[in-house]
Length: 425
Ligand code: UDP
Image 1: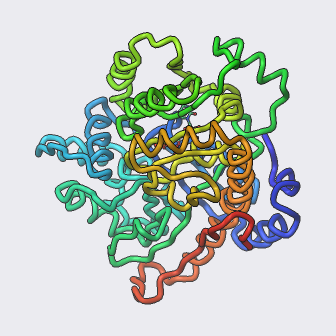
Image 2: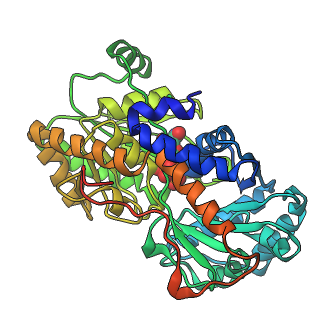
């Protein structure tokens, strides 16, 4: 696994020095990350690399996962959908399940942690014990809460409000909970198996193993099989594109242990594809990092047709690989994809199909968007930058007296995304 110094070639010496300076001040600080899965989805992807990097920086970091029943994950998936504006039915029994499982997990909290970081809504119930804990608690909201269902929000937000601060990916997500707020988009690890450079030989052998011919341009979406990623809409877009330009579609994704809906959605996708020989539906095991890397690299166009998107790391990954991306302008995608510069935004299937066709017909456009995309990611969304932002955030938090509520007019902001390719600090 890569160490902090290995990233110097990507982000430059100065940033690495800044990380070391900050890390010295935080040495020995105990940090506990808590989420709901080690496997699948963006949060696990982030923690897999952030945790070892923080440890290497000299902090005492642990990562724990709350243990829930199948029923609990059905409830939290419903909450997840409710955050994203999907109409849901919430019964008193569901709320009881959530309270009950939260209580059963109280012991998971490290009583000596200086910082307890609750990722997303699944572990929020643990904040019940925040008043009895000596550390600072942060709620990291990775999803878009703008249209959250009111019942779900009324139930969960008192716990979020018990935390000392909330972290949101983008300012548009901020909710007024009477505590401090930080804005910090996540990042990808450019040196990880999923994002490292690959040789032409590796590309050829992976594509052969996956059984996908490369004689026609490939349109690719990599995502969990989740309705919010609109895989059926992707097929619709592909069929519109194929009328204009011969091409094939790859829809690839696996599940997450905290997402019980994936199997059903996958069935719907197979039905919609109806054995179309130009549509490749791949079920990826959690170890498929090289496969995802290669698929993103061979794509003529990467699409991300999400209905909602907390951030959209799949977009970041493709942009890092200098691929032209066409995506819905939703949630965190809006700070990544600057229309016409770092990719093309498309709000409907028809628009998306037109944008894909435009790129397939104009390789120079794809090339330009791809290059800008890589620069934008390099400046804003790579792991060392993210680590530095984390260290700054923890240091800022330490500066506040324990339990102090903030003056809302003076919210600290640790991370601003510099828009425009190549224009960042
Ligand atoms: N991912 C993966 N295998 C899959 C599907 C997705 O490893 O089958 C990864 C993907 O490469 C990305 C993350 O999971 O790093 C998904 O994060 P994103 O923010 O795009 O969406 P989320 O799943 O969190 O909604």
